[in-house]
Length: 133
Image: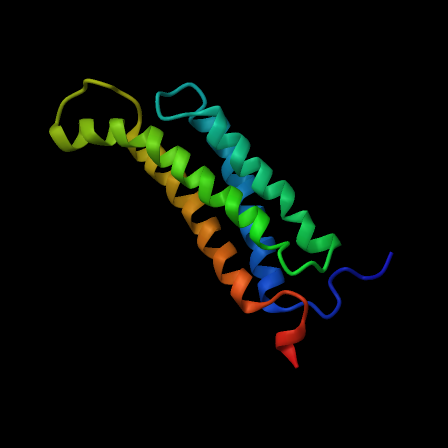
């Protein structure tokens, strides 16, 4: 097996950072927020799928490889944000109608948003080392 890190561009490393962040975020999401009303298994699964599909950029040199995990991160962000907004509305309205930890939901939505932004930027920066010449 050839050295997979040889002649790789900035986008490749940004995608690896996004994958590691999504993996850590997904694990913490299930550990810290697993029983709360701001938790959804779909958000966890999408973040985990994004982190796992980041391996596409490691083992292939396909042009669209960075797009696949980015789509998963964006979907995880949307799902987690959608589940956290009702709890956030309790904070805005100063009531405890729905319950849940709004701060935790927004924090994880922010983590997956960061991964999505890193993924989008990595799609445009280049990952095959062509931009390094």
